[in-house]
Length: 75
Image 1 (cartoon, rainbow, N blue to C red):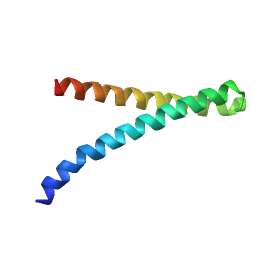
Image 2 (cartoon, rainbow, N blue to C red; image 1 turned 60 degrees about the vertical axis):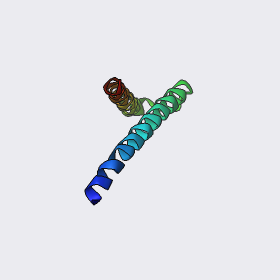
Image 3 (cartoon, rainbow, N blue to C red; image 1 turned 45 degrees about the vertical axis):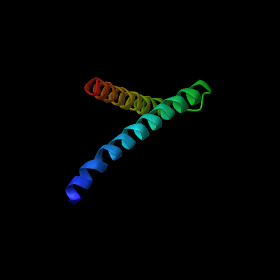
Image 4 (cartoon, rainbow, N blue to C red; image 1 turned 120 degrees about the vertical axis):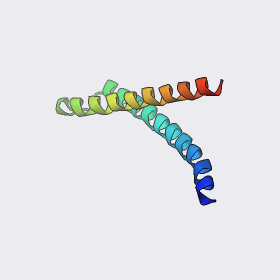
């Protein structure tokens, strides 16, 4: 019986993770962009900050792809 309960809870956990990852990634991109415009980073930090931004954009794209696939499945 606990297996059935676990299966029901998993989609909720997955949806929560997807929503949270999407929100955090979008916020990260916004903060990096704002700080970059204000000159908050040293030159030697820019590659690390750029990688962080690129990774956040990648997470956003993955989440959007998964959401589109789920929407197509439910149609």
